[in-house]
Image (cartoon, rainbow, N blue to C red; front, side, top):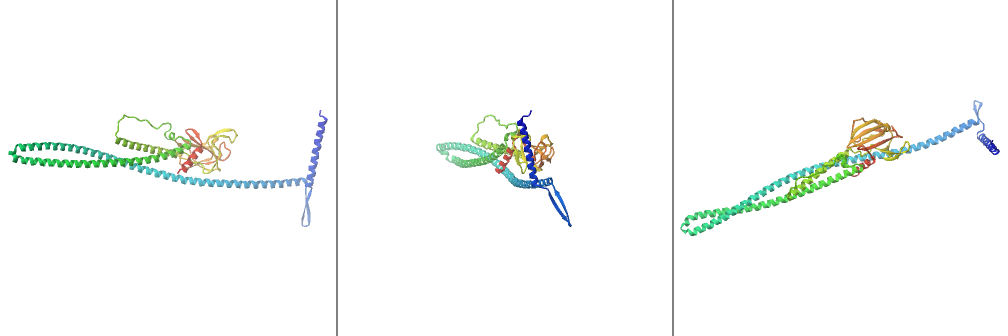
Length: 450
């Protein structure tokens, strides 16, 4: 059974409601009394009665119209502000894109000039090496001639000693055989003449020997100077190529990759050496140092060319000219279910149907619908590097097609599992997802150091 207090409380509530309804009725009656609108036409008077309910409806409609007009005006101003901001961002992006293209063209010209300089320097080095070999042969020939001259000089010395001995014998014979003086005088004259001729030949041989020694010294000096010039030239080329290789390695490392693995794959460059031990003289050691420097230079040039080929395949530029990051690489809250998840790419917000470009040359290995990616493209750039593009509105390439740098491949959309217009962009190396932001950073490093 309901108690007395409960009944009293119920009665109070009913009384309050009736009182409130009465006050509300009085207010509406005061604000919206019944009105009549009189209309006079050609002396005839008509009137239209407006009841309280009709007046309330008209007032409500007018209020709603004013409210809607204010809301629409606010939204229109807000949309104009957003559009102006986006136009400014697009203009800035276009300026950055044009500046990057100019810097890339300058970089390519510089690389071409350096390659031409290196080829010229290698030709000069080969010419100097041939000249060095010719000088070595000349030196060997001069040394042999010097040995032959020394041998002739010794022979002449022996002949002179022999002639002196004969002369002494002749003089003794002349003293012992005075009675045959006239007969021996002719023989003595002949012997003296032979001796004088032998002495003249000896003096001429000594002069030739001294001249040969001077030529040998001059040739050795020339060889030493050529060797120093060759060493200096090769040293400068080695220093330049080492600097270029270091710069390109830094770019690859900035992208999060290992340069040697990109070039050689899973194989390691050959490092073994051996052979029998053969002692070398000073000249051979100098030639060996020069040959070693040339081998190192050729190795640097080959490695540099390999790095340049790899750089052409790396996607170090953005596939969009203008964008903003809506979701970064790594751990994030899912935009659909708001749960923590792993994100293996970048979400790049852009206007609907914004053009998408290939960031590097490659081959299209997939072009079509792929589950939650929606309309999807995958490009193989070689050396284990691939890029992926998801949620496209339109695909402009087909599977197996070769694409070049900056070829248009699709349009931004919101197909698949997506909350709005954007590009889902991934970079893959040997099957493992990499942060695309690192590749963009590497691209900025390239243009900054040109």
